Length: 432
Ligand SMILES: *Cc1c(COP(=O)(O)O)cnc(C)c1O
Image (cartoon, rainbow, N blue to C red; front, side):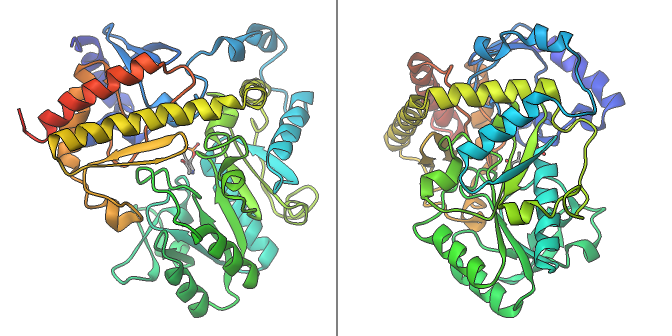
């Protein structure tokens, strides 16, 4: 595998960009490699500056459910660009986009576009706090909701504690109002509600956790959460930045049949451009300025180019709902193939899957929360990643990330991936 150009770029980049990257996971740190720099991508394939070609299972971390540079999505982009790239006053596509989201998610009466998932969750929390006139929020260990201060927390040493910042620069004062509970453990949530009566403004959760690997919710967990939040006058926020338009067209809430009060979206709805959105019940969303007094704004929010790309992506999904069956079948085949390899090799590994979302854990299952996934052997994962890359397959450069599939991935590629998986596992577990 040639890597001269990537290595040179990486060296140069480090002089000008912290760590040479604009988002930490791209540095490949946890897999002990220098990052590859990408020249171009098409469909399920990605090509680096040294001319190496890979089957891409990162897919920009989720937005590209239709694959890279999808022709249908890109069609007419030049015409859109020619009409200007940003106006700072409203454009018709913003109405189309909002309507499309509201129609896809029955729990969303109104939606506000922002520029990232981070902005979406941060803004949703502000609105929920204003709506309930309460300060405390509750999140789950292992769930990621972007990098805003109040959400950069982990739980402390006790089973149930106030948050501890996961990053320097986050004041303890800011996270003192963030409670952290255990994913899939409704008792930890009950305890939090008991200890903080009428104080919790919002519970925010990834309805299927996708940022500690893929960890699906256990039976009843989400419905119990819905019940508890309702009883306590707390706003339930589903962070569907990954699951929205991926788990099913209407996200995890459609799949599980549970309506949150607010929903955060991102990734897919931008079709590969920087977009986020938050929405929910009319009564809550009308708190937002200029109807209400909760301030939230954005120079590039609702950007016409981003709206067009997202709108087209969603439209293609809407008109081809069999895409979700197809994605699930591909994920199932990966699951089956990986499991068969694991069995043949007799190793401690676990495949989790829900619908089209799947993940290979380097520890025995089941995986139900952050403690479980923390048992994974990340050193073995690093070897696995490198062996996959050598075979032309780009899996996430970190254990705690799901595999992102697109409609562009072929069954041939899936079979090739399963075969490569066998050899990479053999190397990672030192069996050869
Ligand atoms: C990616 C992600 C975010 C943050 O979105 P950005 O666009 O990276 O700011 C928030 N929540 C979840 C569940 C995510 O996966």
